[in-house]
Length: 260
Image (spheres, rainbow, N blue to C red):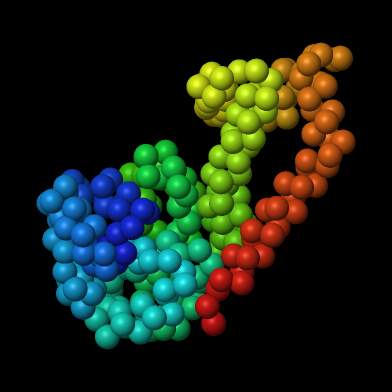
């Protein structure tokens, strides 16, 4: 399959790096220096937008949501009805893309930052003209950067809030844990190593044991112990309410980013 990628920034570049061996890839990247680096590193072809749009079997739109309003009219003259359009822009609905591009097959995706190291998760949904086979084809491309999960489009704003923005929440928690660890007397190097391995090990245990997160938390928490003391502080400060409000705010912003 010939895959066209419009926008080879962080996420587009990560997808490119993961699929260039399996597919013929054409890229359209505004940053000429970056485009040149990608061409040399992965032996792909850099072309102008009309050429990439015209010659691709599947077209990955990997520009920022704020750029979609300008991009879609540029792409429209060159897309075909049998062409698969894959969008990774937060908040941009399949309906909005179909309104601009016509009766095309659209798959909307929400990958997250760990896709850059092949450890991401991508949620996918299809537009009204796309088929289950189209969804499978898009998933086949995105699975190269991590896991894929099919969802209803009505849930994509929730996905954006949970997994799309989620890595930032984890990085924030890691940052705060490291600062607190240093305040307790550990060196920055010790704090970093302890916190990173604790987070990665805990995530691995969640995945490998398939146990409920609440049950695992209970196993760590002895009555009257150190963990209980820490969790009591989290509870008293309303951590659960804070998390719910934060995710609702992210989902709300995702809706706001949608184009008419």
